[in-house]
Each structure stands twice: as structure tokens, then as C-alpha cells.
Image 1 (spheres, rainbow, N blue to C red):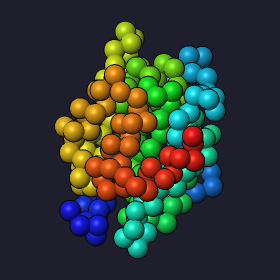
Image 2 (image 1 turned 180 degrees about the vertical axis):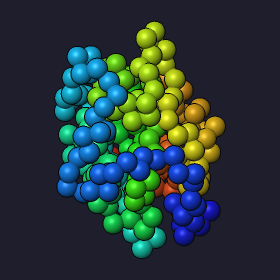
Image 3 (image 1 turned 30 degrees about the vertical axis):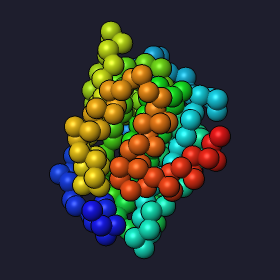
Image 4 (image 1 turned 120 degrees about the vertical axis):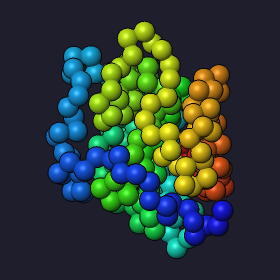
Length: 200
């Protein structure tokens, strides 16, 4: 796959087109709906957050940009930040928390796709809960671990849905390592490794 093909194929629009998502400076309060505030998990601390990285291509070249750790607790804010990226065809956000759950967010204009490696993590970490709420699905009641979201989120970039699912279900591997494998698969490996070093 050539670099010019990365992130260029249009996927079916299953993103969120509600009014307000295209505003860069204001959060859409509608995105906060979908869960009981009483059982919403507490924010992950700095020691819990492994990485928050934006991936995009600028003039065809892969860029991996470390982002503020606070974005690991707020899907709304992460979407807004990714929309600011100067990518040729949108941007992808990688988040890993406590080396037990990773989240991938892809933003192209008003088209937003999300994926979490573990639906059960929604009971423990805000970013995983935000993904479940965004997708309007339920938090598992029996701590049953399974991926949730758009498995084809990076299919056009070289990562088929079945491979992403297999990686996400490798719960014996730490999620930072899994995201490095994913970044390599979509031709961002060296750039991602460089960005990852800033979190060590």
C-alpha cells in the first residue's frame, strides 16, 4: 500500500453528525448523555495513563503527535483536538490506560468513528465509558471483556477488522504494545515509537 492511499478510502458513515460536533471551541452537551452520572468512573490519574497520541499524514508523511494526558479522560475533548490536526485526510487518536484498555478514535470532519478494546473497562475508566455512551451500548454487568465499536476503523489503512479484533482480544498483552503493533500495521511505526518515548 502506498502512502498516498492511507486514510483516503471513504468508509460508511456511521459517525456522529449531531449539531455541535463541528464546533472546535465548544463541547456538545448532547455527547454527555447516555449514562448515570452516579456510576461514572473517576478520572484516570497521570500514573494510570500510558499514552495519548494523534496520528495523521501531512504532505504524505506520517506524523505522531503526543497529546495532553487530560484527553485520556474526555472523548468529547479528544474528538475536538483531533479535528484540529492538519492531516491530509483527518486524524486518528490512540489512548491507552493502565495497560489494560486502548481506545482508537478516528475523525474526518463530522465523521467520527470510535473503538475500545474492552467494553468492561467502561466501569473503571472514563474514556472507555465515553466510547460505550457514544455508541449507545450498555456497560457489561458481568465484567465480560470484549471489543466494542467500529472494527473496520482502520481497514482502509491496512488493518482488517478481524486483525484488529484479534489484537484487542489479546488481554494477556499490555495495550501500549498492542497500539505499537497497530501503528506499525498502518505504516506509522517509527513515528509512533518516537512519540511514545515522550511518555516514558
